[in-house]
Length: 133
Ligand code: FES
Image (cartoon, rainbow, N blue to C red; front, side, top):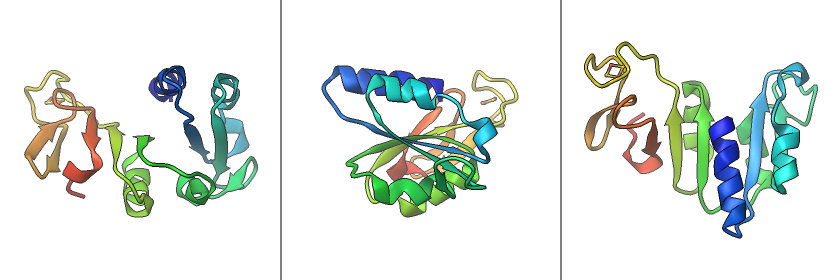
């Protein structure tokens, strides 16, 4: 979330009005909600157990925002759900297990329309349209 916080700060400094959806399992896990709000962003929080914000997953809040592009970071199951639910282009910042971390072992590769990409060297951000799920 910290990189997305900095992205949000940059977008606001450029005069844009980003919406932020933060997803957690329970209210105890929620963090950065107040920090994003302090930037002036529209913030929606989802929790799987419904103990804070909207009950469910981040995709359950998609209907609350009007967006033309998205940036996301999180685990692969969430990525698959976001990819299926998103109506626009966007970017996915991968959290991949890494062996070497500098492009040698090919342990972090992900298949794309442009061949295999190493998340550590070629990523971690991939465009929605290039990813093969
Ligand atoms: S971790 Fe070895 S190539 Fe990415």
